[in-house]
Length: 238
Image 1 (tube, rainbow, N blue to C red):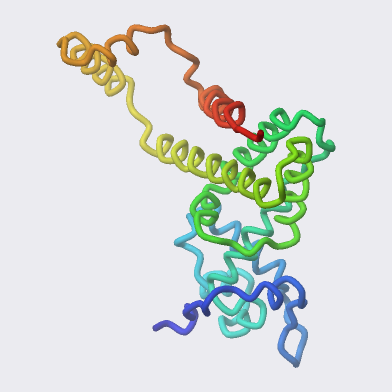
Image 2 (image 1 turned 60 degrees about the horizontal axis):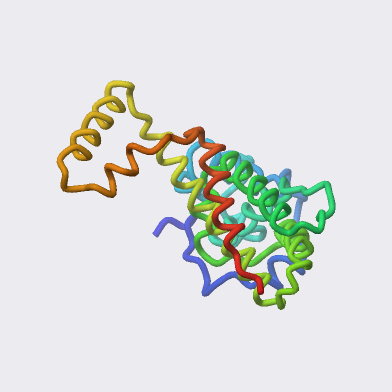
């Protein structure tokens, strides 16, 4: 096994990661910091995907030896935790909650979508349990304040926020996949002719009715807003 890719321990210790500052090894002060290491990893993931991020490549990017990085991030799992929280610092909600929790949750979701589109590796990173760091907790605090008017108990508020985040992550992952598989005008026309033929065969009356109904705006933003509206407006907080 390459020594720059140590296997992760059984989960990341949140006390060690977030409550104790990263200390470099004794000796000459290094020319890099944990912040610089994480920023380099984020830049790499944004450009090439999370699979491209290795301890060896990050070390080369900051001009360090691989082993010297381990006092800042002992494995890639820890580095990923640091990366997620680092970019979560961009999720700044400047206005306090309005008191209309549905409107506020929709605003939060739009912030999350824009954030994940800037960092396309995030939806996959968020699919596994993460230990919230200070930036993540600051945004969670805002979301919980937005949910205060619902009267939900604490556990339910956390569930609603988790449900919202999972929805946004799944939707953005689909958006990214669709954009990567952009279809030509000829392909779109062929698909339309195919569906028209299927609708006319008499065996799919429900589909025929749907295809005959008026279309809706198909921009990515409009589609996201419609799906989000169905989710938020349908939440039962009684």
